[in-house]
Image 1 (spheres, one colour):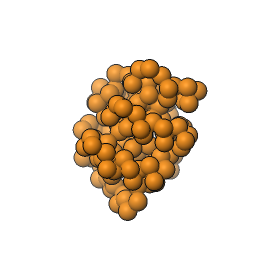
Image 2 (tube, rainbow, N blue to C red; image 1 turned 90 degrees about the vertical axis):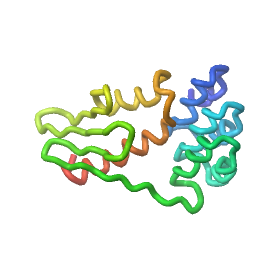
Image 3 (tube, helix red, strand yellow; image 1 turned 45 degrees about the horizontal axis):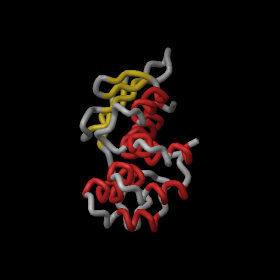
Length: 159
């Protein structure tokens, strides 16, 4: 399905496919050559993009593409991003992002997330990250923030 979506005539669709962590490496290699910088930017941020492709994307004419390649953990000589967290008895939050990302802990219900005007489950947050109304940021960057938040939450609350 993602292979088909990567060939869609609408660049929004190709961009979402390029940012999806389930997109295969060979498809990302092709998307890295897309004429639209937003598509290349999402491919540059995807953790499945091969290192040799990231090396080329790091030289892209568009600074957003280069920035996404620089933040990808698979880029050669990458320095991992570290996040600062706020930890309370009720939540873990990521500091230093455009919106505070919270993961809430209530032992009687499943953990849930809030970020900006969003409130919901992990699945709902992922759907929002990849939705067409969320074009201002590379989805792969937001997924990395989400994964860092989940890791810290598990460390603190054990779930």
